[in-house]
Length: 476
Ligand SMILES: Nc1ncnc2c1ncn2[C@@H]1O[C@H](COP(=O)(O)OP(=O)(O)OP(=O)(O)O)[C@@H](O)[C@H]1O
Ligand SMILES: [Mg+2]
Image (cartoon, rainbow, N blue to C red; front, side, top):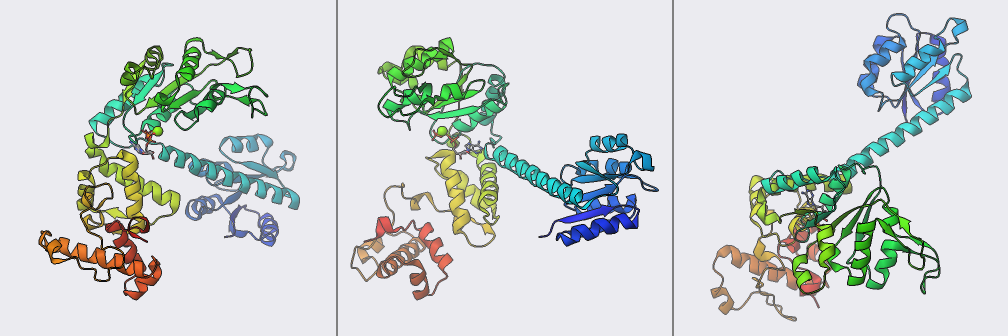
């Protein structure tokens, strides 16, 4: 779409000059000859750029700026000012306009080059601003802690209390409960918020590499060290380091980390030079560190150093009332990030989600929401779209028998029928068996199968999800 530019000037000749130049360059032009019209058009049409004359009879450019001040962040305004010696607006008026949010100014008579450069700059900078704005919003949203349950409120309280201090925080809780979000929130609310937040997943780094990862190394300090590397602790200087899965560090690494915590200093591998760092440490673990201390896998002194402020993040099953707001949050987030269609969850669907067993906690809930958004056709998600616990692959034992390879008769033998309590379950079993047979016959080609059995492809996908049918599990 062509960028749209509003030209505001009481002098017809100036408007014409600007219009001709800008239209030639392919911009879409609208015009106003006075301040009142200008305000109206800025508010109503939201142009991409405004050229605004300062000296006008009636409402002048300064007044226009005052009226639309709240919009100057998104609608860039370039002021047109005359030379003071020609009776036009003085440079002090241009300065006043800039203070009121004008992005730039040009002098009369405007030259073609100046106009085009100004337009390009203004449009570029406003595009950048809007990108930054939406990027910030995305980040904020991605790391927002959602939920109002009282266990989560307790977590929030601890975050608020711990954040402004320099104290080491140990966050513990099951996998997928939101420990990383808590760590980020502490950094965001701390005095170090403008410094770096450096995350290290101790479980993901092989033992022989973790020291160089954390403390850095000099060139040639070990085979493979072809360049000097700055470690994560140094990178986090004046900021926060987040030691995730801290329970997975070797005893040797633990000793070195302890030293940084005590002395705020370190040495790179292969160097004797002592480097001072100013780092706040936040650690997280889903292990029971006290148990690890008993078995000798974790240093007790390090534990006490880390555990200055412990924050426990409770599992989802202990705060089910958070589920509806989390579901809405993820649906919104996923829609924004992946351009999914927005869908609403019925209250029965919500209820079913609340009752489900969430072994993988919030991460599992998020994945379930994503799956529902992909698999459900239509604008709403209803209770019947939400799979039962029993239909999930980790539910024991598999409720639905699958016919063996080579079976064409999909119906289970009578003996099995007798064990099926309800008509609904019978229907599900036969439907599932039928689909598996047809899919297998067609080499798991979903489009082809859907066509052959005369059902929309989307419906077949829905069924696959509903019955947890997948090639890996049922195929070959
Ligand atoms: N209260 C919450 N509000 C919104 N999103 C959340 C919340 N808690 C967790 N999440 C989301 O759930 C997912 C898992 O959270 P996170 O990675 O923080 O968990 P974790 O405890 O660090 O897990 P692990 O032990 O597996 O590393 C992330 O996508 C995170 O954004
Ligand atoms: Mg984590």
